Length: 394
Picture 1 (cartoon, rainbow, N blue to C red):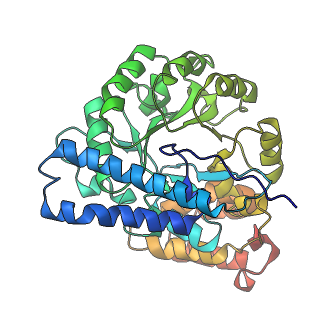
Picture 2: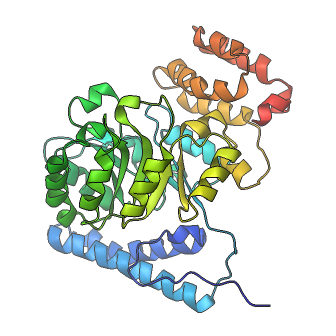
């Protein structure tokens, strides 16, 4: 019987090594850091920024090439089924470090997580409180899998943040061209930039040559017109982007209406970059339809659909369904010492209730809660039986 074909990987080719073997990837990443440790501790590279960035790039290249060499030598068998990677979409105020850690503890391991956006800042120093959500000090902030996202149109501020991310060991950075919030778009940020090709081109000209880690872009079809992105794709093709994440709605749609998969297909075929699909994956049937419609797309980003059904990716992978009670308990416990904890839980239930609470009665009661104790009692009454009731299995 013939062995399955292994992927044809080339040295220096940007690829997600963890999607083939997480342990090997982490080991090699650690080796890369150890190689650079003695130099960084002595402060030599810190005094020479250009050599510092060049050293980091060479270390990353060495790690990538070493992984590919070992992979090809071992000829690791792969499945005949397509390799799908799943990304957690950023939902500001929900998918923070606490949510990400609790999710991976109780549900599936995510391939990538896109962090909620961080605005560009002015000045010459990045304070820790500005980036505390992505500081790599626990498993939810694994720099190989967590992708920091920046929003703004200031190239200097973008470069300042991206250099800090590179110093923290992150493998890439994302530029937000998709946020549909009116307060953002009116400042020509997020999807508000999409009608302005000249501004986007100048921004990329000013930033891409100076970046020490790869850049990806998360975008929509446009602000008011679905044709904005179609006009931008040829521009994007001129830059070495890691990937293009497309949510096929306009910014003015917010999250209303339906996604335009026909327009997505047009942009996908025009692009020379790896494409990530994002938008309205709410059920296994939704995913199966899209995977069949776009067989060349292997990367999928899910946000609201995953909050609505925390087991969605597990169901897609045909893994056992996990109860949600302990996840909700961990989430509440982790937030108890934080301000507005009840507001955070209510925000999650705006989505979670849509999947769990068919009548909407529980969600309505949760939204009227005034205290944490009132919320806990409602939840205990609803879930019951230690999380073993049928409704807890979603």
